[in-house]
Length: 299
Image (tube, rainbow, N blue to C red):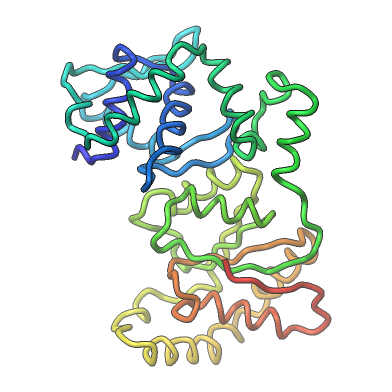
C-alpha cells in the first residue's frame, strides 16, 4: 500500500532526478521533517547521524513492490525510482512547498557537506556517529558530546511502546542514558514494526543499548483475554504477584544483578499506561528488595 509517508519518499527522489544515496536521502528527509508541524518520520542518532528505521523499512518495502531499485556502487548505496510518476503532486500543498524548499536550500551540497551540516545544526543526532570526528572541529565535537552527558545515578525505568514509533522509543532510552533494556514480555513478538525481539535487539545494539529478553517474567497470552476495565487488569496483576513472581525469583534477582552491574536499566512491555502493564509490578517487586541503591522512573 502506498501510504502518504511513502509518497513523501518517492517525491523526494523525484525532486533529485530520481536517485539519491541512502545517506543523503535520510538527511534530506530529516531536514524536511524539521519543518513539518506533524512529522511524517521520527529519527534517532545512528552510525552516520540522523536515521529513520521506518523510512528504511518503507524503502525496502517499495523496492519489493517495484517502486524503487536499490544498488550498491562505489559511491555507496543508491536508491532509484523505477516508475516515472509525479509523486510530488500527490502531496499536500504545504508538504510540496517544504520539499521544494529543502531542494532549494540544500540541493547543491555534496553528501559529505550535507552530513556535516546536520551534525553542526543538530548535534544530538551526531552522538553515535562513527565519522563525526572526521567532519567536525574540536569545538564542534565538544558540542556533540554535551548532548549525551553520562548519568551515574543507578536507576530503574519502565517503558511501553504502545502509541509511539521505534525512533521515539529509542530516543527516550538514549536521553535517559539507559544502558540495558530488559524485555519482560512472555513472547517478544509484535505486529508493530520494530518491536519484535530480533528487530528491537538490532535497533538497541545500534545505539549502544544492550537488549535482554526475560520471558520468565512475562504473562501467558491466554491470561490477557477479556481485559476490558481496570478492575480486570488489577485481578490479573494480583494473580501475577501471587503466583508468577514467586516462582521466578531467580529472574527477578537477575534483573537486580543487571542493575547493580550496569546501573541504568529499563523494563519494557507493550502497554502505554503503566497501570495496565505487569512491568509496573515487576518494578514494584524490585523496589521492595532489600539493600537497593537505585531509584525509579517511568518513561
